[in-house]
Length: 77
Image (cartoon, rainbow, N blue to C red; front, top):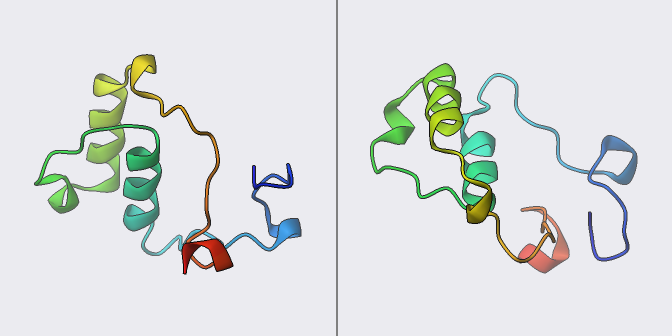
């Protein structure tokens, strides 16, 4: 949700995920969700990253803030 309560969606002009290279968006999402990513995770496949995330997920790692700033929004500049 943005600061106006709008969900991130195509209708609200959210940036689409690059399906040919989803790894950067996946890693950004995992970082937002509080994961402490290992230094070598970028070398893993998307399937391996998801498997690692499933094994290492803990609800206590969620951030206190739920506001997401899209990387191309005015707030991200």
